[in-house]
Length: 205
Image (cartoon, rainbow, N blue to C red; front, side, top):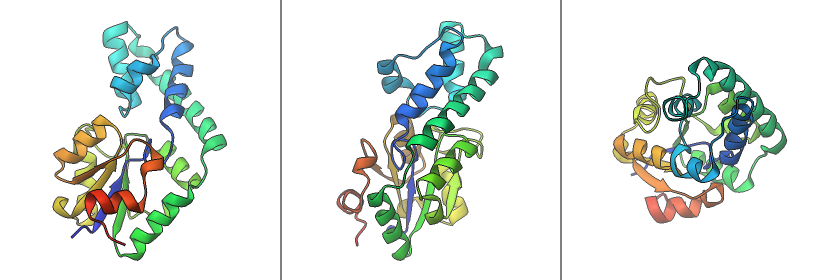
């Protein structure tokens, strides 16, 4: 019997995948670097900014002393984009409200930092439905490690066998499976609905 539903944020509850891509490239371009769109989707999507910058340092020579300023600029740009584009989605609010009315525990586990996460969840109207929120600042090893999902389940007193995770990216899917949870894979926020949970995970109305 499913009693817990955990969501990724970017690309699942918030259509922010492109926001993060654009914001990071704006910051990188200042110093003459960039991540191509195909490379981002195939490899970088879902990683923390810190991990992306480390890969760029190892493979493309990005000076590590620039990591902090690039991260700061990236977060600033992300918040500015979110302030313009982040709005409540009726289907998501109906889904979350129904889950809560059914007595289910609901949470978000994300590789984003807490400031950005809380900002987006407030703007989207999602925050009020959550019983737990885990960001990349709450764990030593973010996705694809299972730490975030394991911590969320621990805080909720949930069993992996009774937990559904809704994810869109390979790193998050890997993390959820490693945590022992049941996984619902979606392509984008438009796929997130009561119907997909019912069909794939057996969550009934």
